[in-house]
Image (tube, rainbow, N blue to C red):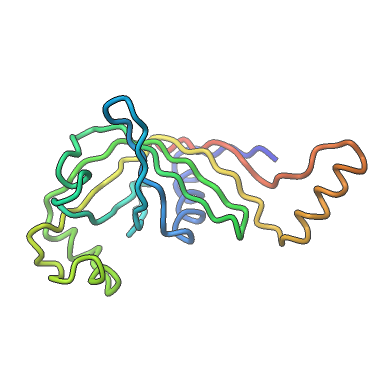
Length: 166
C-alpha cells in the first residue's frame, strides 16, 4: 500500500525505519562513476539529518564538498525493509557534536577516541526518501507470493512511499 509522508511525519517514519538498520551504503557520483561505501549511521536527528563519523584520511573525509549530493541506501532483508535517502553532505567541524555522537563502538574505528585528529563529523541533510516496508514474517510474505502465483494477482509488498523531508 502506498503511503507518502510530509515534514515531521516523514522524519518520524525515516527515524523508525533507518535507526533499526544502522548501516547504509553511502553513495556518491564521482568522475562519472557511482561509488558506494558502507557507513554506520550514528543518529538521525529531529530534522531528519543523518550523522556519521569518518576519517580525514578517507576519500569522504578528505574530499567531501559542502552540498555534495549523496544517496544513502539502507537495507534489512530479514525484515523486508529498504530505504533510499537523497540529500547533501558536508563535513561539520564541531567538538560538541563529536562528544554528542561518540559511543563505545566508535572506538573500534577510532582507537585514539574523540580526540583523534583525523576524526570528522559528516552530516547528510536529507531532502527526500523512498521506502519499502513489508515487516510481516517471512511466512506471511511467502504465502502472499504463493497466493499471487495461484490467483494471477500481485503479491502484497507491504507499505511503500515517498518521504518529503525538506
